[in-house]
Image (cartoon, rainbow, N blue to C red; front, side, top):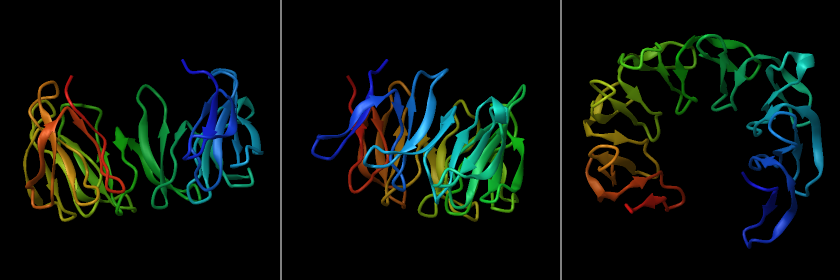
Length: 265
């Protein structure tokens, strides 16, 4: 457990005092923070001066993206998720069991039941893809990676467009999102199938020969050779050649020229 949360600047100076029980990040000038514990606390939004600018007493809240933020309302709204604008007005009515931030104009929503089924809505709250899939990723480069069934052993990951149509048919054991025109996919089975990279036509452009793979970022993708316990991560370019040889216990995406990587103990 942590103590109170506050905010520091890049020099390490405290600019908003430690007084919140939970805090997310600042996006579009606002940040969701919680006052009180997880069960009984309330979420609100502050600006960079620490002023409370939206105090709706929400049960949960996430960040603003393109002017909308998903929030969970209280018992008066059946504890459903909806979306508010930057003034705190309801922009999309609270009718969802689960709701995500928007990405490329679309957001994930889910219907809770014996199994959580996932679908997609647009910025007006219109259902674009009915909640029917085991999983939908956020849209990236116009496509969402979709797991059709709840059978983990079934190779039925594919990619849909913003109309909900499959443009790459379900056929993969697992899949990541498209970045820089390529997406990592696992062929074969979930237990020991190999990972490669496809283009938006579904063509395998980097051979499926890796034991794990992440999406491309700044021209490089982290891939693993070997199993989860003893394998090592390195980075390949878009020709599939190693630019940074496998030597790391873990490796993540590059951002602004740097990537976090860990060595073995």
